[in-house]
Image (tube, rainbow, N blue to C red; front, side, top):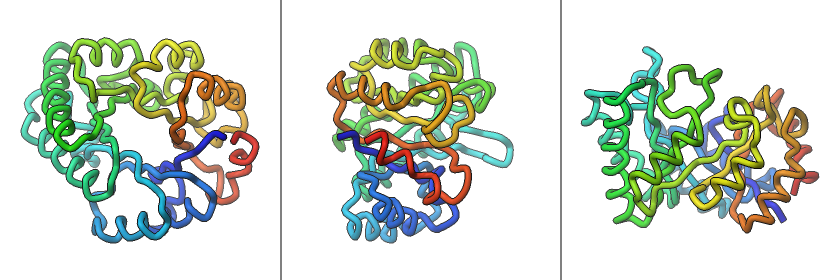
Amino acid sequence: MTRFSANLGFLWTDRPLPDAIRAAAVAGFDAVECHWPYDLPVGDLRRALDETGLPMLSLNTRRGDVESGENGLAALPGRRTEARAAVDEALGHAEALGAAAVHVMAGASSGTAAEAAFVETLLYACDRAEVAGRIILIEPLNRFDAPGYFLNTTAQAAELIERIGAPNLRLMFDCYHVGRTEGDVSGRLQALMPMVGHIQFAAVPDRGPPDHGTVDYGTLFREIAALGWDRPLGAEYRPTGPTDDTLEWMARLR
């Protein structure tokens, strides 16, 4: 049976994160993941996880100055100290919450200096995460939703993962982002599966619930299972109304 993780950066955003964790449990999700849990007491989140029995799969490093449009720090030249601090903070929260993975956000940048900054930050993150037995994720974001984001294709991500060579550096494969820019979600996933650390999904092209659009998730989830993947898949979609009213897909796609 396919298992699902609720991405609480998108689902149940109308309530505090601890209550969103509880809502995910009531709805039948098998795990949760989040974006930026840093403005809440970590003890409140830990209690909600313990109460529900849901594991926290992953969380993101901070974006930086959101008001000025920043969307990550790791690939920004000249921001080495802040990028490392964001990694340390995320790993600290991952430790407290039992999260197995941290997604290091690259940010909007380009060029050789940006790539050098990203590689340096990832080497630092992988070294720190290895001590704690955690993995580091990198995720290509599509150019429509995240214009100018440094990491924007799976080929670029795969080349970096192979070049860095850290055993705990993995690809966050988001079917929505890949579908928007590369098209062949199934083919790319099969080719990249050996380096995938987490899989997320949403309808293509509108990022709604996975019950419509150009990707047939019933077929894709069966293909993923056939590849030997048995971890929860991350539901990172934009609800078209109250989250609880958009969950009919779960029973059908399990």
